[in-house]
Length: 214
Ligand SMILES: [Zn+2]
Ligand SMILES: [Zn+2]
Image (cartoon, rainbow, N blue to C red; front, top):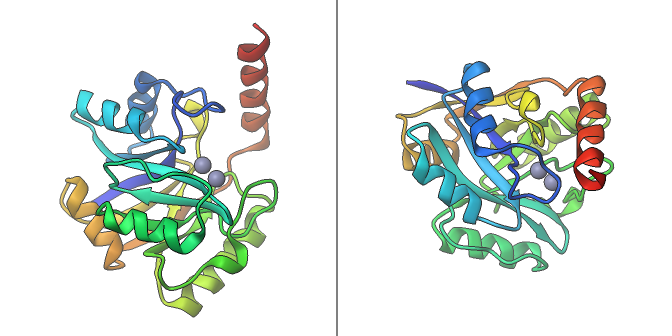
């Protein structure tokens, strides 16, 4: 079957995100998604907890702040620490049974891997809805993926409920975490999506300020 999965979503377990577990499921269903990967910054506890509490397909993941840029690990069941080099981060993800994704590899205002991407990655997030400038980063990321011959995925990088599903990956797999991750590893997936509208991003920033200053 073909599953529609947003592989890059943050929850309130990330210091800079507004998405509660309830919002996550609500917006994912509203967007017609079959599953989401929770990829909070440098922590896995929220993803594992939320995955246990719902029947909705949740791929537990983590967005790791490596020394050379952000790296997503999917289906990791233990914490991969931040501030390691790229190779060691990839080793840790693979040892934990997960797959490694070069997220937003080429973009401004985010910690991007740029020249540190190699075929040791299992996939590249060629569409990231929060990338800037959007079209440029999609084009450059596609070039890298085809040069290295690795799988292409897409995620919204949502930090606010309504942003969920602006990008998604179609995965040919049965609806389990292991099947989804194996399918991505084999490249049985394709990326779709668009940029999050600026008005929505401003609204999110306002809500974050409001939360910070009450
Ligand atoms: Zn990031
Ligand atoms: Zn992110």
